[in-house]
Amino acid sequence: MQHNSDIAVIPVEADLTVVTAPQLRRELDSLIDGGCKRIILNMGKADFIDSAGMATILLEIRKMRAAGGLLSLMNVTNTAYRALQRVRIVDFVPVTPADTARQVPELDPRVEPIWRRVLSSDAEHMSETRRRVESLLKKTPLTADEAFDMTLACGEAMGNAFDHTDSAFSLVTVTYYPDRVSLEIADTGKGYQLKSGEEPHSITDKGLERGRGIKLMRLLADEVTISLKSSGKGTSVRLVKMLDTAPKEA
Image (cartoon, rainbow, N blue to C red; front, top):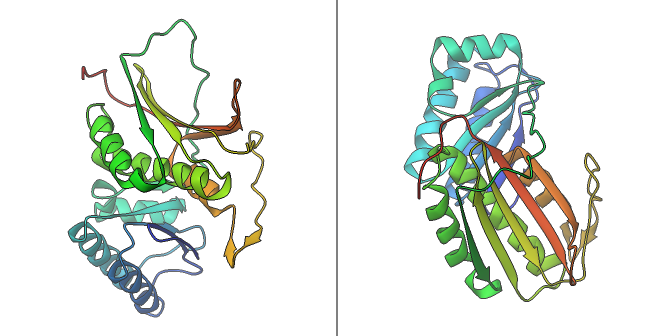
């Protein structure tokens, strides 16, 4: 299980049945009671979900919502997805079938943004910046769940900037295009880059495993690019979420 204070990724290692559901429920209850606001269930090894498994998922969805968080399912097999459709769980939380990574086409440089906002932040004001980012994202056609995820991903990027690159300051640019929303987090730290498709190195620093934040950002956004800034010192992290609805004025 990957876990930080806000986000957890739990692998479901077998079919979700009356035998295995109680253990999953205990794990989820512990995370929610501990203040975790975003839980992702990796369902890749669960080909069958019985009534006890469905009941557990529905119960934890309600508990997570009541706590102000979000639970979603990813890497769902075809058989499990059909079962989730029958009980309409797919209508209540994000459910991503296996092998359905969203394609992000290259942005046409001729396309003008509908609007753009730039925020500044330092380590002491990260919470305030996250709230301002979430407020801006609500002015786009993103669903509430998508805005929630992108806000968390932005928080991960800002946390990385202050914790791993020794940056004292960062700029967060929220840009709303006709077909996507982009967040760019630019810091003034020592600089870091990661090629497209390259996995971050998992290293241990001060007892914590590094590299998980990037993996989590990739789960929350449709595209994540991490590069050295083209001018000045530091790193630029770009998070993209594609839109399914028509443009909306700020």
